[in-house]
Length: 355
Image (cartoon, rainbow, N blue to C red):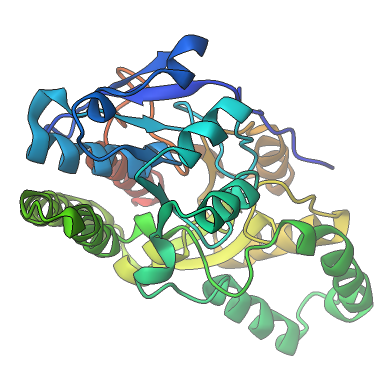
């Protein structure tokens, strides 16, 4: 079985007209907007290009807090895009090359933009890669521990005969789409995102305008206030039910921060671009049954067809629940800002795992 991935339109650019409100919306820019100067450029404000919509919302709040309604920036990825498979257009690369600052997630999340970011940085553009600066977690720590325990107990007889095949599969299929040693999905820990807001504000303030730094602190405070609601929702789930199976390895930070456990992923390697083999899926079915998993959490940016098939094979009352993982949602989605996205995700997780 192979996952059917929904490939987002890579050539679209989001022009985010940010506000201090968490409900800020962006609009899809037309082709001419990709090469036109932004409002910030026209007014000698810092010209900022951001890779993902999640970071774009936070950066936009800081810019508008400091500069008012005249602020603007370019976000490379459109709403709903999967950061793992997004490819920047030549016009978007040109925008990065002319920017005062490029804000990226880093740690390999934007697989199709890594080379472009490295090139513009080599040409002298300031690049701020956030994930490496917020004490990133080792990749796959949660579910790898559980998998190791299962192998040592050898409860199902699968492990010994599949060891060589899984190692071979990892070398051929997963390494091509891995992120290295550290997990880039840091935004699922809201304290780390609050720290990111402070770092971005401080970076924007290097030109001497301290309002950026104070606005970064203000946005961070709002994120921390929202985290209280998120933690309350996730904390309402009984301890025994706090086990997660996800489409790819994206919720390690949420698990570590809010006392959950990732017991399995459908697509190994930390990216949505890998291909699970049949033995890995069979082992995951065993894990789901053994752990009493109630839900498989998918990604609104990708197809849930493989997850639905897996849930049907498990049988029982296992549901597939879509989360906003790598992108904000559109109008009415409940994920129009980073804070809304995290609140909606927490509510969906809690609802799926509650008694």
